[in-house]
Amino acid sequence: MRTWTVLALLVCCVLCTPSFCIAGERPPLMLAEVYDGNVDLTDYWVSEKYDGIRAYWDGHRLLTRGGHVIRAPDGFVAGWPTVPLDGELWAGRGRFAVVAQTVRDERPDESAWRQIRFMVFDLPAHPGPFTERLAVMRRLLSGASSDHVQLVPQVKVANRRELDAMLRDIVSAGGEGLMLHRGGSLYHAGRTRDLLKLKPYADAEARVIAHVPGKGKYLGLLGALLVERPDGLRFRLGTGFTDEERRHPPPVGSWVTYSYQGFTAGGVPRFARFMRVRDEPPEEDEPPVK
Figure 1 (cartoon, one colour):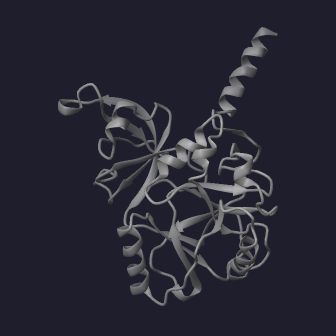
Figure 2 (spheres, rainbow, N blue to C red):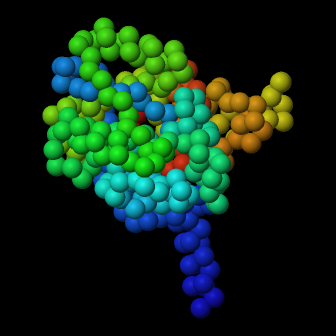
């Protein structure tokens, strides 16, 4: 009996974190491919790519991509529509850390949650194409009694020149990039070219294997992270950290997102730079970096 009690506690520790607990299956989310220029832009709606945490509102509660329940205050979700919504928890450009810390809090901090908005970009249960879903979302959210849930602005561009200009404006203002959503597409789970992301750099995920001690001005602090990609390749991340992150680096076993610019002859990401800690491992269907 004692053995089973210990096992039960271990399972609970695995399935629950201070910020959220397993709700069940992962929500069936639509996942983006990378924009490669080979599409008719007039078929797509374009919006800002928000630097936040992807979340799914099932009509009653917020879930992460992995199916964990997010412990948002009751007041934060009061008055939300009782239909599924797909969106991003966002606190403004360059403020990902604020969202991540707020979501991780064991006890919801209402003052911190007041800084966050749920930016809605899709209506998963609606059977119509995206352009029709967008019109429904506008009507649905315009009548919402909560300021915490907002519709992501969607616009049209005529050509690549206008798209590039929009990307430059967003990035120069501190944004991450753009999302392109094909107007005629139905909502369906999995990765698809009906939803595309465009950023000025590539990024990917890796698991922290070890902490490499710093030298010189970083003596006594983190020098670099030894990380491992999902395909098993290991390399170091030595830049992109704040002084606080070097004092308290991401723990071994956690997943991090890094940016990079192409690859070396050996397939190692060039100019790899730490961006942030991920709250969950990458999706199983996310393709490996090539």
